[in-house]
Length: 260
Image (tube, rainbow, N blue to C red; front, top):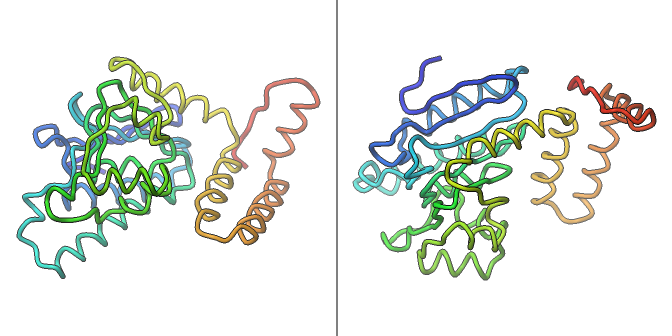
């Protein structure tokens, strides 16, 4: 399928989705959210893609925010519909049964940070900058920023960032647990692909189950989450990958997982 606002390519089990609006610092609009939903729906049923990387075109921005020119004149009802479209796209990424890595090259602000936070892992360049500056526009985040930021970095730090609208650098983002790793600017995609390649060596079924256990369990009380984890654990023992993994361990060799 041809896309207008994103680029999508896949090779050797890795899909790369690139937000392609460099003239607007990759700002997100209705078209981008629609196409993100479409491409992740495609990826969800493509057994050839095991791991996904999301990045932004150019080196100035991952995504500098949501397109204010599109939002500013909308009514309350219209903006609610827009927020639901944002949520639909973001949840398609968050709930994908495959690992998603954000490769953050430059600004990840507002909707851009919200997009990064629905990914499972986040690698950024040294020049990356992060923030939820919506408060400076007289609004609050509407794409998950108040909820996902709090869950990732804790209530106290999230309130500081959301109340002030301050922008933080890559090292601060690493220090507060917002990103997994900071790398030199020219190494970002190499590092993201190296991580994706590492995940390709794991069992696809186990990756799907552990992601589901984490994401679903975060919204349950502890006992319910432990019950759900036990069900996912038991499901592993119905797979060929479990047999291969345990046999390989006993035989002291590297497992050859087939994703079944």
